[in-house]
Image 1: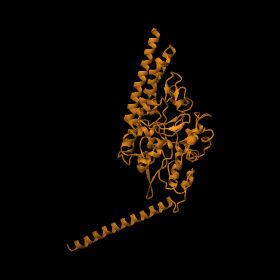
Image 2 (image 1 turned 90 degrees about the horizontal axis):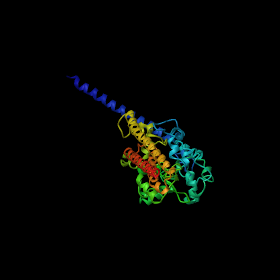
Image 3 (image 1 turned 60 degrees about the vertical axis):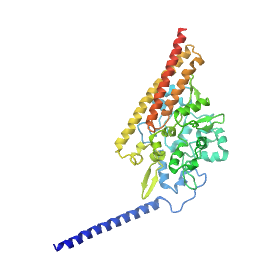
Image 4 (image 1 turned 45 degrees about the vertical axis):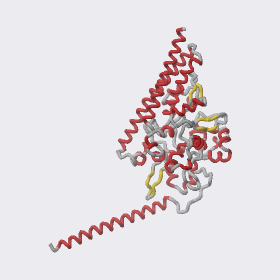
Amino acid sequence: MANQPLNKKYILLFFLTAIVTVAITLLLVNIFEKKQEATLYPSVFKPVGEFEIDPKVWGQNFPFEYDTYLQTQNDTSPTFYHGSKKFQKLEKYPNLLTLFAGYAFEKDYTEDRGHYWSLTDVKGTLRVNEKTPNTCITCKSPQVLVDMEKMGPENFYKAMFKDVGANYTQAIACLDCHDPKTMELRVKRPAFLEALQRRGIDITKATRQEMRTYVCAQCHVEYYFKGDGKYLTFPWDKGLNVDSIEAYYDQIAFTDWAHTVDGAPIIKMQHPDYELWSSGIHAKSGVSCADCHMPYEREGSVKVSTHWIRSPLTNVNNACQTCHKWDEAELTNRVKTIQDRTYEILLKTEIAIMDAINAIKKAKESGATDEQLKNARYLHRRAQLRWDFIAAENSMGFHSPQESLRILGNAVDYARQSQIEAERLLKNVVMK
């Protein structure tokens, strides 16, 4: 019994020693992390010029961001539906030759690569020629911002690519998204700012989280070249969904080209990533583009947004598991299921559109007039616009799965209506 107080003292001493040891360990870890942090960023901030296009200069202040930015040249991480590996889509998907008959995309349609390659790839595409307007370079280089300041947006767009954009040397970089004085996120592309203004949205009131999407949305969108001046314009006046965009184009009677097989007035969708994302659960939950494509990582005691902009499928741990507490295989399989289902319907839509094209062609060759074919061609236009809204978008339906299937379902419906209308005309012409 006399030993009990002594035992309690030893036990108490043990726990006190353990607590002190843990405290000292945590202190040493903190000191180590602070030392790491000190090496991560320079102690003296080096000023960046107002129009500094070279990311290496910015990287003197932000070496982690610069090092990860350089990884956007990496094209060795394929995903289920391509990732950033360059290949010729016309060879892998020959249906595109029929769908884009008469347009530049039947000459060349390669898979997009990372930001590091943006300038190289636009200069190398066969879609660029002597008549290409400078508008096509708008989102490919920070040098755009320099020339827009000098020339003004209108004159910038009016210029020819061969005279201006073809001479650029720097691909997408820091100046495209950041203010060089404050380093805050900003948007400088006029088309996006003008589109928001027409919709009554004041970007100066945007939160930082909203800006983590807006800096992406200034380029990852559907657009068209307005008028003879080829003024870059976003068709958002009636809304962001595909039906509103179609209504806008119909109202202004806009057409990219007349299909050379059936004569339909077709619109080429570009890459409506922001528009489709806007209807999805992530957008409605306040998740930004950067949360998934540029997720935060730990560097010592610092939380930094990686600038290796890539598919979340190549970085599930940081991009997905921060919010979704399932294992990587489960999350990956969920994405694959969504994309596989979208792709299945996408292919069926292509077949339906090509059936419509062939039916219109036969009716035309049999003597049907342009006036008689007007409705069948318009239905083809409606079907292809919706098919391309999903085909040209970069998530294979993942950004908004239910909306993607709704759009493709309507596309199949319009294509079959077009086919039926053309076959009815063909029957009537033959009977006469």
